[in-house]
Image (cartoon, rainbow, N blue to C red; front, side, top):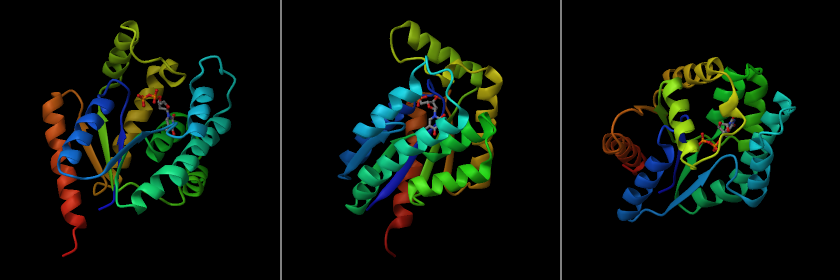
Length: 215
Ligand code: TYD
C-alpha cells in the first residue's frame, strides 16, 4: 500500500532519528520503505543542494532560491517519489513542499500565490498523505544545531545563519499550516523523549494505513 509521509521541523528537532526509527518499524512489519530528503535525493538534486547550501552564495536572490529548491523537488518527484509510490512503496521524505511555504513564504515573505503555482508545477500536484512536524522553540533548535556543529556533526547552512526572527516566522508558519489542514498534519513536541515521539508517530502512521485499507 503506497503512502507518502513527509517530515518537517528545524535541524536538531530529531527528524533523521525519527525517520530512521519509523523506517525500521515499518520494515519489520514487511512494508517496503524508501527514504529520501530535500533538497537532494537524486544526483541532479544533490548538485542543486550544494549550490543552495554554500554559505558563500550570499548574493542568491530569493526568487532564484525558491526556483532551485523547486527544481530539486521536481526532479525528485518525477525520478523517485512517483515511481516508488506507483510500486506500492511507503516513501518517507525529510522535508518537502511545506518547507518552501514555511521558509520562502512565511520566512522570506515571498508571494504565496506564486509559491503555490511553482510548487504545483514542480510536484505535479503530489501532496503528502501525512506530514509530521517536529516542533521545537527556535532558540532550542539553533542551540542544538550549533552544539552538533561544534561536535563536528552536521553543517551550518545559509538558512541557519539567518536571524532568530526569521526562524520564528518559519515556526509560526508551520503551526498555522498544521492548524489549517489538521487531517494531514501531526504536530509533535520535539522536546519529548525519542521513544515517546516514536510511539506517537507510529500510532498516527498506523491510523493512516488503516484508513487506506479497502473496506
Ligand atoms: P538541511 O541541511 O537538509 O537541514 P535540515 O536538517 O534542517 O533539514 O537543510 C535544509 C535547509 O533548507 C533548511 O534550513 C531548510 C531549507 N529549505 C528551504 O528553505 N526551502 C525548501 O523548500 C527546503 C526543502 C529546504
